[in-house]
Every structure is written in C-alpha cells, then in structure tokens.
Image (cartoon, rainbow, N blue to C red; front, side, top):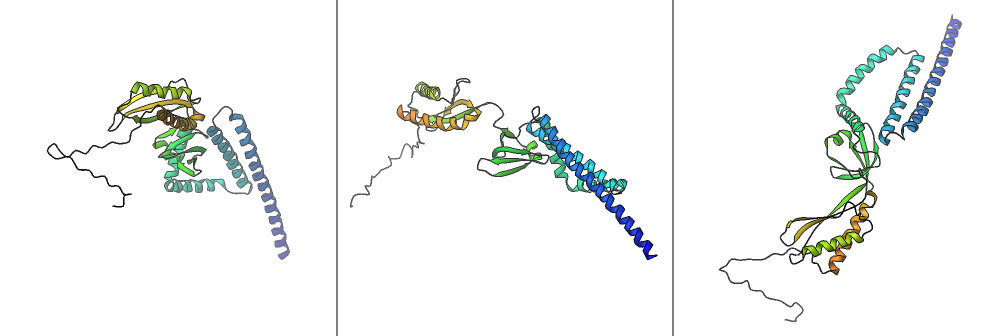
Length: 283
C-alpha cells in the first residue's frame, strides 16, 4: 500500500512538472512575441503618426498580447477561467469605486490623444509651469522644466486647464512694452526702433515689426514694439533686441523715464522750504 501511494505521488509530481514546464514555455513565448510585435508596430506607424500615438499603440499591442498569453498560461496550469472572470469582475468593480480619479485621467488621456494639443518635444505652459514634454501617458504627462525639474501633470488637469503650446507654430512674436519721456518726438522713436529691428539678423522682415501706442502713463508715453523670429531663435531675439534698443536710445539721447512725483500742498499754503545739507562739511 505505501509503495502504491509513492508511485501515485511520483506520477502526479511528474505531471505537474510537465504542466509547469509547458506553461512556462507559453509565458516566455508570449513575453518575447509581445516585445517583438510591439516594436514592429512602432516602426511601422512612427513615420505616419505622432510620437504620442505611436507610443500608446506600442503599449496597447504589448499589453494585449501579454494578457492573452497570461490567460493561455493559466489554462495550461488547469485554472478554471470562469471563476477567475467572476473574481476579476468583482475586483474590477471594487477598483473602479476606489480609483475614480485614475479612470478620469485615463478618459482625459484618450481625449488628449485624439485632440493632440501638444506632442512629445513641445514646450508648454500649464498653471505657471513651463517646460518640455518628455512623456505623455494614459494617466499623466511628464514635463522637464528649464531649470531641470521633473513635473508630473495629471491628464484631467490638462483637459480642464488652459494649456499654452509655445512650439506649435514655426514663428513666434516677442512683445517689448516700454515708455519714453513726454518730451521725445514719437516719430523719431519709431524710426529708431524700426532701424534696430532692421539691423537685427534674427528679426524677420515678414511679418513686419509692429508699433502699438498703449496710452499716456504717469511719467511716460507707453507703447508696445513687437518683432518676430523663428521658433528656435526666439530666446536669442528676446535678449538681443532689448540690449540693442537700450544702446540705440542712449546713442540717440532718447530718455526712458523713471516715475516722477509732484508734491502739491494747496493753493493757499506757502512753498515748502528745502534745505540742502552737505554731509561732507565739518559742520
């Protein structure tokens, strides 16, 4: 009797080892096949779709094949998949109640995928945060700021908040808001500004530089001078134009005024007395 029991156990053990080996082989095959097919799909679509779309497609193909072979592996091991499906349904319901925010981010990510307000490599501004988009996933987008910080922004926030894409178009405008003293000839000021823009090699001739009068300030005549450049040269234009305008105004003796204040004490009061004190004198 003990000998028969040992024989049965040996047979059962050999069957289990064989099933585990076959299940492991199925799992390994699925892992390799998912990796190869996802990369192949990525190579096919990357030249026709955006980086974001090709990345999401690659991930979807990988996980679909991977889950399919996981199911085949479980069947190979003899698991009752109907029980697993029922348990998975209950688990999915529980997770759904516990992760409403994640579901909202996934749905928002799908809307962003279809709308494509920005792509990987674009520079965007969101709630005062500006940086380069390095990744767009189903739950969030990752941004690297210009001071090299990593920022994660949920997709739901991106869908609800105003997003500015700085690199959407090939050219970009730079607005210089400033003022000059009331004594200055404004036509002469305009001529000097246009000459500075004409001599700057980064400033585009078309669209033409734009001068807009903004009003009469407390101490200056305020205006806006706008110039255009290519997207790649915008920062260099921003720095060079301001320096060149300051140099040109100094050369032409055009005053950029500081605030002036007049103290008035009423028509019936005497002038306020002033006394100049020389701090260097011995007294």
